[in-house]
Image (tube, rainbow, N blue to C red):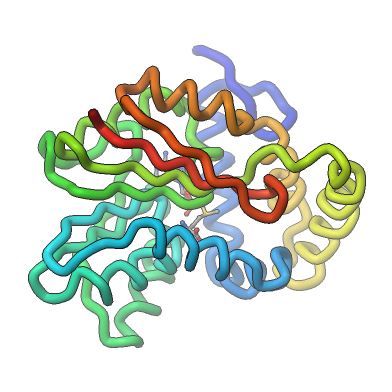
Length: 243
Ligand SMILES: C[S@@+](CC[C@H](N)C(=O)[O-])C[C@H]1O[C@@H](n2cnc3c(N)ncnc32)[C@H](O)[C@@H]1O
């Protein structure tokens, strides 16, 4: 079987999928509180910016991939209204259930399905917008997943990839210190899971930087790709147009 990376370790592809599932099974119930703690609330601003750039309209069809506990799906659902659709998906049942329960508690009933971004169960050209926030990093065949996202978009539709990226050089050392010393400890004390948060830090370092991801999106069929750096490159939003 082909080899790939799980954080800094080289593992079989099947082992990576199993371990990624293990990470999100483990963190699902504490995911939202950990997100707020580790990012010091900044993930809310990164997502709000993504929603603002998306500028979806009533009636739009949106697919949120790796949607987890549903932050983006919830924001889009309010904007597309009753005439639009937001499909909330994730490969991990524990994350998706946590998200679905949260959305139901807020009075939102969205079509929800477990699916692997690398094999999407949707017809060609079904959506105006596809989003994936902090999910691409965990996928084994990122190029295949990007092609699938393109396949389900209509011509002229947009893919928005919000993901950790390459931080500006002056911040690299303090960011590394925080990532490898503080994040796993917060993981241990709050979520009872140090390893998953070490994986988080490692997987961020292994993820393609801004320019590499832009090239990958172009190769996957997105004729135009814009990159929006946020928080000095801690996070980047890539917006690709299928054209
Ligand atoms: C860090 S969470 C992000 C959740 C949410 N999008 C957010 O921004 O808060 C990453 C999610 O990616 C999902 N994921 C990992 N591999 C996937 C795949 N191949 N297809 C779909 N989702 C995947 C995980 O199950 C997890 O819920």
